Image (cartoon, rainbow, N blue to C red; front, side, top):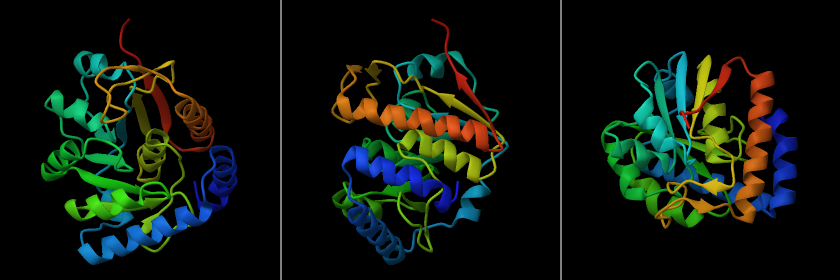
Length: 235
């Protein structure tokens, strides 16, 4: 999805969620400056070399833990959605790529990054403090934004970390994208926020984000080149 296709989604999201376009732009500029200052950034083609034809994207839904026990993921690229990184590490798995707005457990993100995971760090108006504090701690970082792309800060489409990870996999060449832990139900997985100790009932803003994520994933299924599959563990 290029900016021309994404812009109409983005403007609707901004309006319905109460976000600021100007703050998003400031965040993108901040991320760009941090990446240039630290000189630890990577470009799109460097990350594309990591992605094979099949990619598993691990979301933070309640079914994630059971799926990690039940299935074998050795035949594809592993892309963790923010807090899902913690679940993978608990099962002795290191993701190849982490997609994050730095809302997950930073110590676990750093462990995975130190063990070889690439970071796709997202800038938006509400996480500028986290960008400043944490981006310098990571290496091999691809920058992303939800507003107009900059030279080293990309926009491949997608809103939440989860659907944005699927758009990233599509952009980087995956032709089969398997979504794991994408439940979109009434319960939020315990890996979604650092403060959660157990699965929790969904809250209002999260429900809105789920609706946008589902809509965008349907768009990707219809318009992308990759085949998208939802992996569900046995009940």
